[in-house]
Image (cartoon, rainbow, N blue to C red; front, side, top):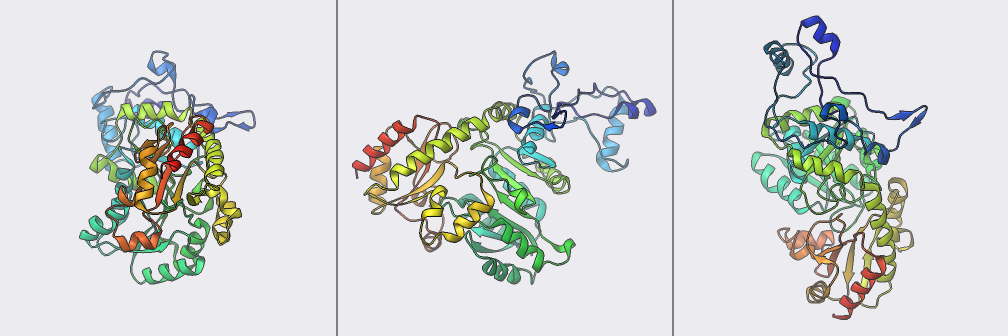
Length: 444
């Protein structure tokens, strides 16, 4: 909601003046539950609280005014726990603001999450999640590969503070997952962290198998580590991990949610219990996104379904062209799993988990770094840049760019080779993109 406040009843009983109460959002018409694409146009915002403005204003303020001293005392009694029930309302922009609250309300809708939080970047969301869950001596079990900065955070940064890690490959079987979790269970496992599809190989993680393994090995529910997953590549349109056993979903909102390559932000979704734990850490270290970025994200969420659908349709056409090109060794596109020999398990995961193949894929060119660089340097429409999920098509070389810091042996083990190019398809004309890739491949 634009402003969260004490109820009118509370105000009457205490004599504390309440802030104006927002009009409830409409999320149903009769028995029909409104779709996320409809709710993005107004959910959580009452224009009458902002002079009738159709769109939420940007609330550029560092602090919020209490109606009187008693209201301020009551708020902090809730914050500090002296009064049960917690505190609602706004007090200081490190904790939250109207733009961020509206954004968080809308973020949760896509995956039916109980609650959501917005962050200053995808990595600040991931770092805040880790810091809220782990302590020295704990183990994080994760799938591999992960986004390089995430791997660095786990192994090099948290490792300095006595946090351990174990991993399994993204496409691991139930037996392989069992083996790693059983080994980790000799100590305290604070978190199981997944990334699916893996960056940049596009390998899928069997979320259902991870959840089943976790529940079987950690029979005591109180000791059961939550499962968190980075859903940036496919979510929220093509994969909704909470439905398959994940407890927490992480996003780089910079990508498809923002969608225009003009902002940096992150998000975390999940149960109120988990989100409240993460919120306490965010409030302490101040990793919330700013109000202008939240406002831009609200704008972008209105066209999320349209943009992702168009990019997905373009990717199908482009990948169909690339898969038969004589200079292409293989296209790592999820839509081809069913027809690729040796990918039966990945195809099974895809059928159970995904509703679409996405628009980001790996292109494995015949040759090595020289050939990959020649292709990248010849592109005319696609831009040579890291990131994904924007309106424009982007291409990059993970081994030499985003994953350069990953040790060579680990890169080879994870399939991050010198001839692998990562491509994120945008919303341009598909035939124009095919023409661009055709001339770039001719330059090799």
